[in-house]
Amino acid sequence: MTFSKARARKRFLSDFLSAVALLCIGNIAVAAPERVITTGHSVTELVLALGAGDSLIAVDSSTRLPADFKKVPVVGYYRQLPVEGLLAQNPQVLIGGEHMGPPNTLTLLQNSGVKIVRLPEAQDGKQLIANIARLSEVLERPADSVTKYVEHQLQSLNSARASLLVAPRILFVRAQEGRGLKAAGTDTSPDSLIRMAGGVNAVAFSGYKQLSDEALIELRPDWILFSSDQEAQLKGGTALLEWQPLLKLTPAGKNGAFFSVDGFALLGGMGLASLNEARKLNEKFARN
Image: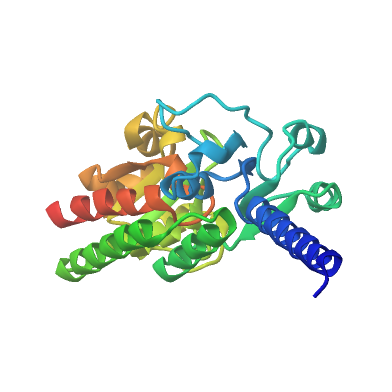
């Protein structure tokens, strides 16, 4: 082999290796995003649990960040996200639940080069673990410790449910004075929480529906739950008895069995906060 041919071959090999190195670097940059926006509290808490807080550059208004976490911009609400506000943060990835939107915002972001990741809202432990696995892939962060923690919590809750002698009837309500009560039925986050804690939803319809006065008695709830954002308004539950006196005839009304659920545990499907809240609720059931 002549000297010129050897030099050409060496140059080709050098160029080839450089190209491979650049390709690898490019793949790493795509696989491990450094600028992430999350929407929905349950999604954000999973991202933080996976150790990707250093990549988080903004959240939506439904997210509660830890008190000691860095300050990041709050950009809209997950159902009504503003295109301009999001693009101003120069994100690589936007992560949220299936109700994240509106659709035209997501389309415009995608056309601008932002990767959109939408996770199904977890209604059970299986989907929660699947969401953790998906986020682990997107963020290139190991999921073993988070998955094991969730599995342990689910197993513990399963044992706690089995130890209940009777599954209590639970009614989750949203209420306003003079406007009656709306109850959470199936296919809602409160329903998932109720089942996870070992209770039975007192209503069988899907979604949220207004309750008639007759239904309040017929449902016979043992416990009445409401979101923490209404705790002051509902005076810990006593205001419900003032607004709807018929509730006094129910087991919950007679026993003052009200429970304020952490509102963030109800946002975006089942998450880590939901597991913690289910445990608290189960302990309430077990003591009564």
